[in-house]
Length: 309
Image: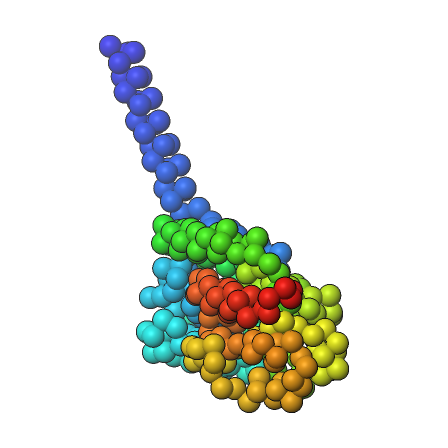
């Protein structure tokens, strides 16, 4: 009779131990590495999140955490329901008192888009902070999966990441072997500014079979002269504009180039505008912006005079 009792006790002990292990695993800390290279650890999935950049807000919603967003900055307008989230400032000034009052358990910031002085003050709140600074096309998918981990919404986040990757790979397969098109991407006209090769938009240009004529410049957003653009003589000039939906959308910042009719992009009427929300924000909608840019560069190829590159 002794052996059965001991066996029963042993089974009970093993059951209790296994239950404890499972419970510990269920409440295990969640840790990811953010874009600054720092680990971000939460004791449990975030329930109250503050977003400090429009693209971050969009990423959180795409990752399945929209209902967790309790505060966001100005221009956090996608998806539409994000417009109803209380505002806590903009990229130049944050309302730290309101942020603290909202009692977030996670803050997601744009590492170089938010003012550095504001970020220093934000650290004083001692709230877990994830720094977002995507540079390459796949960084969108990587960020989605990391946010899914922190939010406990990995199923939704992983699905969104996979769908985005499929869209990008489809474009890569379609345009990677097309004849190259030299591109000047105009960020601003006064002063004249562009993007270098480490910016995600430059990745999109390459994806479409284009070549960023100022890829080698520094810093990330360099200022250039009109003379430099004329010397580079790009085949296409591209810019972003709020709500731009058609290749022939009239924009003064592009039309100004018509003063130089010898410029190849002007001669061939390759002046293109793309909705800034689709091309400038590192979110899943970037695949839509990339598709649009690829179409524009294909138009540029179709306008080449016979026998000319």
